[in-house]
Length: 116
Length: 114
Image (cartoon, rainbow over all chains, first blue to last red; front, side, top):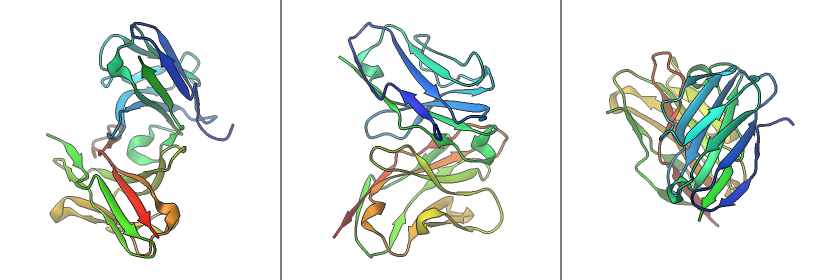
């Protein structure tokens, strides 16, 4: 597709379950970002990939959160032992380069996660 | 501490009236500055950005923003608001140090009344 695609758009799960959220960036974009947006807040940075490697994972809140991008394209955000506080919209963005400082991030519509 | 602040949680403007959304930052050096818009059911979209040079920058959809170093501000403006401008607006910064991650403010929700 032409834009950043995120699946699922909505995910409802029970506390303690494992969740995977997928991001398909714009073709050719080397930089990929995950953000989390809680109700009434701005997006909060989680992790940034440049190619296949995580260039900055300082925003991951704890070791229950993990993300991969094995082939430098699609990325998966993985959350283990989900907690109610993990409920949020998870946003993915991509950029042709390390875009945060010099260019534009292209965002997907997000995956809304609800933990019951 | 480094931060970006949007003082107004929500603003209501009449259609056709002018708009100004406030953004203040607290960084040691002037960061790169951005405004994004988030419309219902859509992803965040870049409206405009400031890196250096002319302090008045033009963006898409008729928006502009003015960088004021003395006030550490980067306010977003539009001369005449349309109903389709109703959305949430986020100011964002990147420290001018080669670090690539955007830091967002908490956002301002714009409501447009007829």
